[in-house]
Length: 276
Image 1 (cartoon, rainbow, N blue to C red):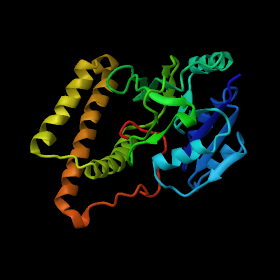
Image 2 (cartoon, one colour):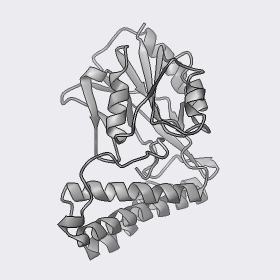
Image 3 (cartoon, one colour):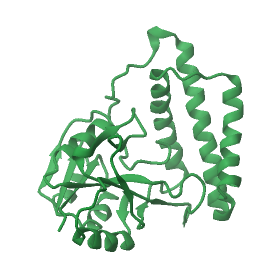
Image 4 (tube, rainbow, N blue to C red):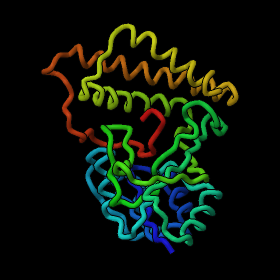
C-alpha cells in the first residue's frame, strides 16, 4: 500500500485543528504539525494525534509549508490546512487509491468546497477551487509570494485529479472574513509591488465590478442564494482592497516600500482563506 505523510502548519488553531486531525485517522500513516509557538491549546491537541509536533518561528506561508513537507518520511504527502477536513467521499477514495499500484501521476488536484453563511458554496470562483494537496514531495516545491502559496509540480510531471472534496470551514461570520481580508490584501499588494504590477484609476474603478459579474453571472453565484451574492460582492471588494493598497504603496516612493522578505510576523489563521 502507498504510504502518506499528512502535514499541517498551525498557529492558535485550538477551535478547528482537532476536526482536521480527526479526519486524517485511517488515511495518514504519519501526521506532522509545524506550529509557530501557539499561545493556546493547539500543541496539546495535536499531541493527542501525533508525536511529530515541531515548534518553529514563522517565516511565511510558503516557507513554513515547504519545511513541513520536507519533514515527511513517506513517499506521498497530503497537505491540509487547520480549517479543513477530508470529506467522507474523499476518505473512501484515498483508501482505495492507497491500495492501487503506482501510476504515472506524481500529484493530484483535489476540489475544495467552502462552507459560508450557513451553506456550501457550489458556484462562483470559490468552487471547485482545485488544490494540489496530494503529491510526491520530490516532484515539485511550494511556490508563491506572501500569499497564494501552492505546491507546483515540475514541468512535464503527470498530474491526476481526485473527485472527493476537501471541506473548508474558513469564516465563522462576515466580521472574521473582513478582518482576514484586511490582512491578506496587504500581503497581496506587497507581492504585486515586488512583481512590478501596475495600477491606475481605470483598473481600480473597473476591475471590481467585472469580478462581481464574473462570479454572480458567469459563474452562476445567483444559484447559491444570498451566500452567492455575498461571495460575489466580497470577491469584488477583495480585488478593490488589493489594488487600492498597491496604489498606496506605489505612492510612498522607493524609500518606504515594504521589504521583500517573507517574514511578515504572526500567521494568524493558517486556514488558506479565500482572500489569500
